[in-house]
Length: 186
Image 1 (cartoon, rainbow, N blue to C red):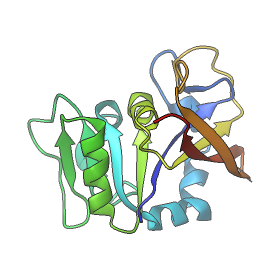
Image 2: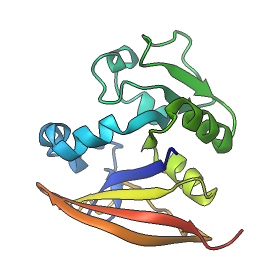
Image 3: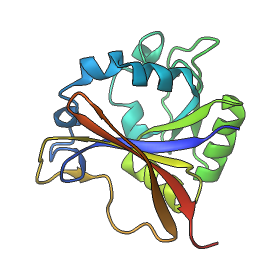
Image 4: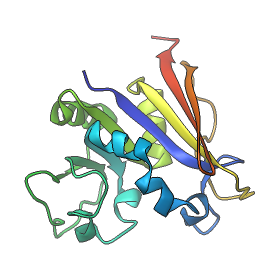
């Protein structure tokens, strides 16, 4: 059964982007990260991706085909789908959803089959999934940089959520934490 895994790379002080909106300060090791065996395993175990519009727009939308690490169905939450659809093939497809987070997770799980659903971008999307009780795991990669300001991953409490630490691993400069997500209220 597919797990829904959300998470982000964060600075030591909890930011996912700097004050100008750039995520590059928390990815000084991007080239090493994408070659890591752990990342290769994550890619193999992923059957669908959920992301927000801002994450989708971080690069040229046509560059996803053949270049993005996850060549799987991608579900983008947005109220502004692109007027020209990005390039797709039989493995990499895009579905733009204006519906609620429950619909996105339901459709992504159906597309993933027995593989995992990765929530790869957007603090807001991750927060919605956590708050709705739809996440099975939370993964945080902490990099040793202090931004002081910017876009925080957590912006307030997550009511009704309990996290149980399952793994801690060091990979290069990153400390990777994995938590099982448990609902404490109905």
